[in-house]
Image (spheres, rainbow, N blue to C red):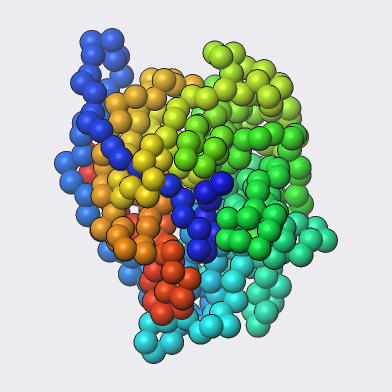
Length: 362
């Protein structure tokens, strides 16, 4: 299984060209990108904070959710804490967590974890578990009734090797955005799908749509579930399979091949827009987009948005996603994660394990 822990690669892939529009496409769809540039504001904000705050120094995942007070919660999985030294590296004893949240309040960043500032721990831990053996990674998140709901993916260690771990279940964390304290964890029904790769709130039909991944290592497939809006932890989920909705998790079927473990789905320029690192080829530097007239697909028109310049040698990139809450009608703000196969590199160069931020213009 390929996911995101510190020394583990997550497959990305190769893009193809945009399919032409047809007369049947009633709603406008995005033209091919006109250009991509580094989002210097976010890059400098998080770079300066990571280098100087003495708290968060880098993470992967990087979902973003607007909170009721107007601030933005950045939802992270594996996270380095502590100082960055004068040479731009991390001390060997830097605390390492499996999840955290950084709140961006008009440019002022605050890191939220469990434990204490002197001895930070993951914000959400598996009750009673040794976190070296059992842990949660965060998925996408949404706000319901003033509370932040974060998708949880539980994993267990199965051996001593880097790749010796497996997915064991899904849950939802309820977090109070006032202080980012954990309120509760709600387990979801047994499923082989990693739910929480993306969340889309549809005001038109009153549903919260949750995308997941069937992770077969070299092959990854997107799946789709839904629940009435506002009831992520209280209502029965429905799963999309073979053109129908069912309350049976096993009825879920594949809607798209070649997604990464994390991606995004948003309504952009008249179409449902899925942005992902393309997992049809391993360790590609390509970030791609698919479009659909329906939330259930089909998602077609594979379009290359960006080629990550960091990819090469020991360095790889993964889990690209768009942030519609940060862009506008002509721009998608896209993040992706950067990692290395050489574990010591994380301590030599703190910039390696930090998200990157780009603006894709249409």
